[in-house]
Length: 258
Image (tube, rainbow, N blue to C red):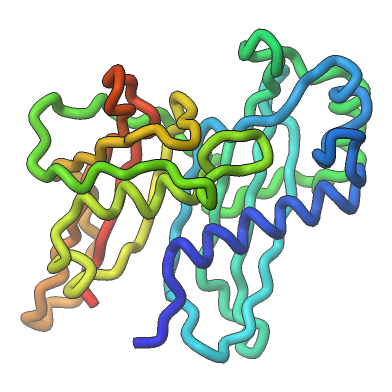
C-alpha cells in the first residue's frame, strides 16, 4: 500500500521537535538543546505521556509539513503539540499532543520549571492556547494492565540502535515493540488510528523487555448503515523489564477497518 508507518511518522515528530529547540537554544556543552538555566541546575525534559491520532496515512510521494509548538503546563510540566498537513491539498492528516516533565537529572525526580525558562516559553508559545487534537485535549493516565494478558509478544532486547542521547531506549522504539504483541491479522485488516502512551520507567541497552497486550474498551464512531463492518478494535499494551518485572510503558492502540 506504500503507506508510511506509525514508526516513520513518530520519528518525524521527534526530529521536528529536536530541530525546534535547537533553533531556540542551540547545543549545550553536553550536546543537548536545553535552556542554559536548566543546564546550570542539571535539569532536563522527559516525555511522560503522548497521544497521536491519524486521519490518513501519507503514501509514497506525498509532501507532508509537520508543525509544532509548546507551552508551559503548570509549574512542573510542558505540553508539546504537532500537526501533520498535506502540503499539496492543505488537508490535515493527523495530530499529536504530549506532556513533558522537568526532571532533576541527578535525583531523577520532578522539579519546578525555572522562572526564566517559563518566560522563554511565553515568548515562543502561541499567543492563544492551541491544542492539536481539539480544545483542552491532553494525554491522560491509562488504566492499569490486566495481569493475565490475552497476547504475549516476543521478548525484545534493547539494541545499541534503540538508545537515545540520554543512554535510554528511544521513545519511538517502544511503540514498535508494543505493537509486536498483536496478531499479524490485526495490521492486515485494520489501520492504526490512534496511539496513547504513558512512559513509566526507562530501559537500558542490553535489557530484555517483555511485550503483552489485551483487548480494551473503546468508543466506536458513528458510520453510515451500508452493510460494511466498521467495528473498531482497541488494545491495552504493557512493556516490562524481564529481569525484575518493572513496568516500563503502557500503551493503548485504536484500530479501524481498512
